[in-house]
Image 1 (cartoon, helix red, strand yellow):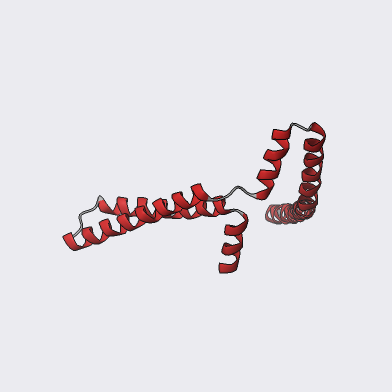
Image 2: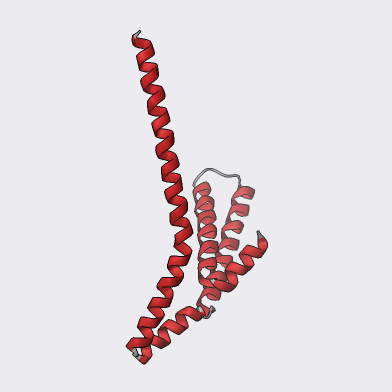
Length: 138
């Protein structure tokens, strides 16, 4: 909900503004598509007003996105690269890989369990299909 969006904005401001831009641009495309139809003058003015409003919001988001500070991890990585200390870069990479593995492990376990369940269900379905085929031959 709203708290997740606030957290997303704090952790990944550029990603959040990109998502918001995507929604606004889709809205604008829908409005412009609707503008190709015949509309009464009042409807057309309202539609043009909506497009102008969307354009203003897009401009505000783009400006906000350009001012967003880089994520602390990106700053750390950039600092490591700029210092050129290979041992620190390797250590950072190892820590990042360890973090990635800890996040991926439960997902991979879940994926394996789901594949096994799918295989089991496919086997049951195949057995039922074969049994039905045998019954129709009798």
